Length: 174
Image (cartoon, rainbow, N blue to C red; front, side):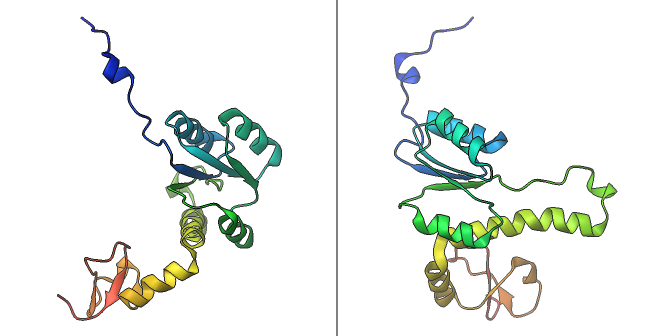
């Protein structure tokens, strides 16, 4: 037995109304589908992509607020893009960069290292450019010397609970 949806349930507020979503690699595939979903939920969408023609077509399809064509691995282009963006930006999704397809066990160590590190480095680069160097410096000044969480096991390092970043600080263990 099925029941008809109540008028209140059918008339819910869009979850992203008034928010801005930036999609790095938003002209195709997962990025484009995410742009469609974000627009359906009321968000303003900003798309980037490498191919200007495909980017223009995707922007027209989703009604993007703005577009920028550049290679996401170009650090200067990425910095310029984030420097020109209006504030605030509520969400950033990175889908750019071609993955290496195939079983990891079939790849040699260099291929695995490249496949994994390219995506991690791009994500970090986007975060740095989005936050800007000033905020990164303020964070470092407030919390001291940063280390990757993989250094937690070393004596003398601990993670501070008040720090929102996944960083590890030098200092006595608590």
